[in-house]
Length: 210
Image 1 (spheres, rainbow, N blue to C red):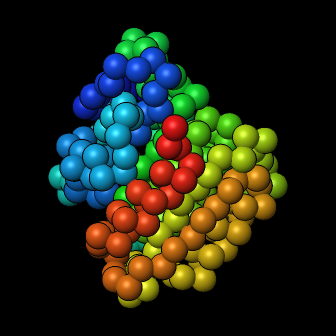
Image 2: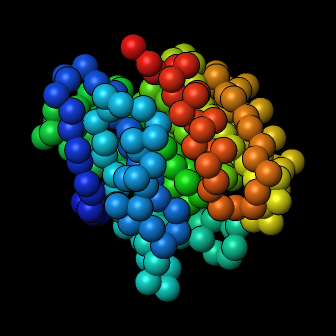
Image 3: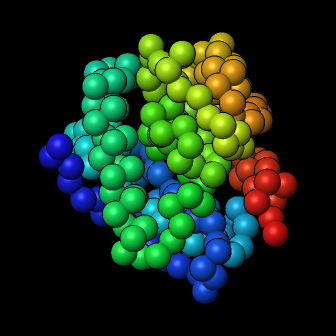
């Protein structure tokens, strides 16, 4: 397949057994967008932050959409495979453990992380999904994880972009397929607030502290 490399920032720690935070920006962000967030989620992690290979009116994204809230699911499939192919190759070059990736995604980044959970259900050690939407349909009976990786999901109570009922159904779908899902609702819109970060940091400490 015609996969393209991805632009990235990689910040390793001096620990061969470390987990790696895989940072995935929202629409219009880039590989530096979520770097300030990483330190708030815990210490001792490698940091790998990617830039999406798609542009929408000059704004980087991880996959195309047909309209607001309507995803080009064919492109979601392609871009997810492209990203995982890139991650596997990069892990061999940089020396991080591909089995110890924790995705941290906001909005569009959360959605490609979710697509990774569905298409590669054994890959991620965990996922933090801020303002997620279900990225793919028709896979309800075709993915399942034996790994039971933990997944954090936070939604905005006033988020006009994401339907709360759809988010609940998405969380239930992931749970039904073996993921250990924790859901939170924050009193805000689609934007990230400090409460999101505090909740995610507590969740990270619970699941990944040594």
